[in-house]
Amino acid sequence: MTPLRRLYYFLGLPVLRGLMRLLTWTYRFEPIIGAENIEPFIRTDKVCSPAYWHQHHILGSSLVRSWISRGFKACFLVSGSVDGDVPARIARAWGAEVIRGSARRTGALALRDQQRMIKDGYSIVTTADGPAGPRYEFKAGTVLMARIGGIPLLPIGCAAANAWYLDRWDAFMIPKPFSRVAMAVGEPILVPADQPLDDLEAIRQNVQEAVMSLMRDSENALGSA
Image (cartoon, rainbow, N blue to C red; front, side):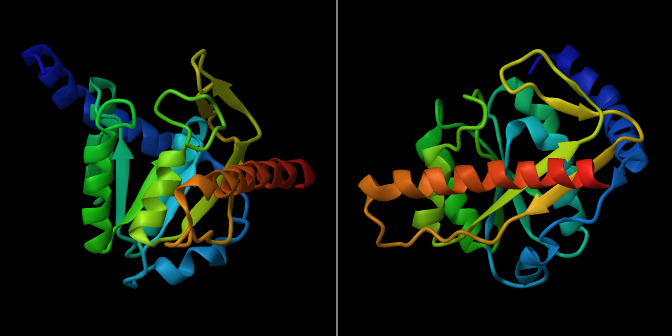
């Protein structure tokens, strides 16, 4: 990292964190659908893997942050590229652990680190179609991680009534100030430890549809309110 980039992070990161906190403070949150599904993992030694789309990282991470404040032990999987430096620093400021890596560049090392964090009692938070898509395609690596670690996947869906969408592969969503937002947490989906690797595709499709269904539930909650 160059000295100029270090200075940028030193000066800009507190401002960015403040803006994010101010922005999320303005949101009008609908009651969380399926909120009871996270309760078994709060202030306990039970571990899971919350997963939401890369597009919904602002809302998904804010939800996980609220869990962290209640004792949830979270570890975010963040891209190993320079672009991941800011999200990693923000997650650590929340009190979460961070693993840097991606399936494209350091998948085996990231998987090893995930298993280590799981043994230490941390839940692995992933944007399951990241870091480069395709959008809304749940990555098989996340399912494999859950199988090896013996932990359930916890699907999460999000929606905003008014938002900006960035012109990039994930159409990254930034809910506008004072927007109504909705989130849904699905039932944990366990990947059996004896599940043959060749049969993981059926589970991958199942959890992918679960996240999509929860996203639709969130959108419907905004439409009916």
